[in-house]
Length: 379
Image 1: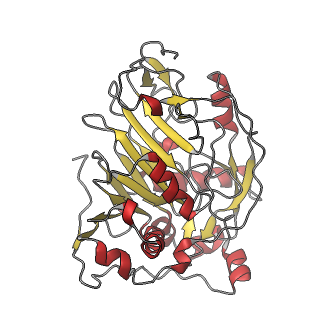
Image 2: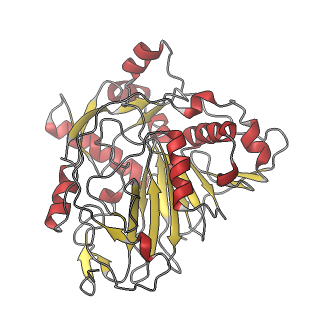
């Protein structure tokens, strides 16, 4: 196994580090990153059935099993206590999909679910994505797992990236980008390494009606090129040819019917059919709102055996890179969603009209609910 040069500096988003600290006694060494020289065919469009469409709108089966439901902010983020993801019925899984679609991201602590069970849960929600450039675990047969790994051998280089560009929606350049996604951090640094999410629902809702209407008619290019080039520059084989895809700037969620901003600093490159200066200005404004509007965000401090499930169609996220030289190791499972639908396409395809009414999250059916405050980790 290749050991990385000491303090190799990297851009953690586009140029993943090759090699590691060489510690073979590490308990999860079998899940350390590898970059297999495989070649995959281009992805083709396929039908998707969103499990949230089958859910009880009141989510009785799921919420009655929880001992506590904590809404972390008004806009985004809910933590469930007393739920074991390994024991969920199909009805509870459907209701979990609905809750994630409503709240953007749901957190559960003390989850002993292993990667094989995490994959099984992910497959319930859809066909799993296989990434073209990022690492998979050393253990064979886990090519549908995305490995997030940093240790003392990989020092993020602040001259190689800005904090803003680290905000992203996972592989939004795919024709059918991800939907309900799960991440479990299996090894934590003693401090730092938090993850933040920003709500596309809240971003859209906070805009003026005229700007909402204008953005709803626009489309933007999402590109895999920079990520593929970064991989090649690091000597990593690109397993599927990079693509660029056009998606609506505003998409409608197929379950909630709510509109969400669907651009991100990591992969969105330009808005079509407007002057470049206009495209640049609009994207910079939206990117700044994603990264800096704390009313739209939730920040999660990981604990051992915690897992996050988020809907990549309606949130953008980033990690903090403040934990070097400590190890941070996570495993992500990423089901595909549908091809994003614009407001017009949604109405034509479904015969429905979008609804931006706020989701009601009141106490239901005997479960305990606490209105949380935004975690003050930066005070």
